[in-house]
Length: 330
Image 1 (cartoon, rainbow, N blue to C red):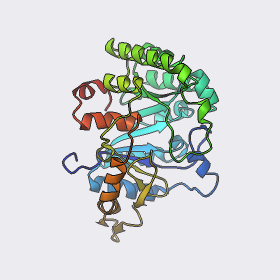
Image 2: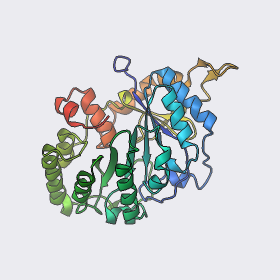
Image 3: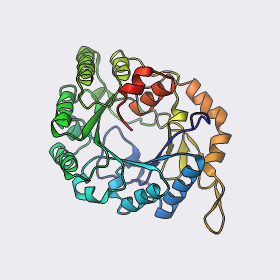
Image 4: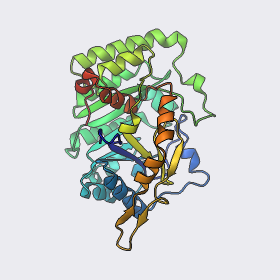
């Protein structure tokens, strides 16, 4: 896939509904108007297209995928196609549904400390930690669970507590990333969330402490290179998102980059299947080929970002040796 210059992971929005109202996310807002969930059959077609395209990993991403009753069947189908499987959840339903997730290889839970989880996500922090602890101790995890922590003005004093919590209970890892401005969001009070000038020293100190904990063997998946670059306010350059993660939303629209959030085309409308469900024309392949110039210009004209999902893959694709060894995931 690297030689073909294609992504290796499909991040697929399997639903539009959510049981939280995170202030920096507008995905749940879309569901209040005209959004609808894709059918099981449509999701299976997307998985078939991705496998035919050459993608080997499937991430059930969305507002809250555990709201789908058929999520276990979706993941079982992806596994039957030889894919590694992932899901990202807010954790509120993790304890209730953990026993159903045997076909999920990697589970990621979004949690940012008691203050941020309550004020930004409107969620019960203790309940989420209880679910994480249950998952860790249940023996049901295929791989260590990942806690993803977005660093904002709300939780600078709480991030280290999450890292220590992960180490103490075991079978849990932590990823951190700074909050960033999505171009598609225009009604968020960013001044209340962004790390201000008066907090920069505290932020830099936190990053240094995380680097030290990483060296000591604490379960941080971020590479030291990434932590040091975001400490210094540097965006990751020479982006290789086109060789990392492909995103498809619940309307079957393909995105090269979720930060820019510009649709490149509908992969199901562009696909052709015969009467037996065999792929005659792969919509992912067609959209990918037709948008080559557009995708290149998007990357070329981008100032870079600090979104760790793209940044760490970019560092590795650009042959950063430390990130090869330091990015402790997958």
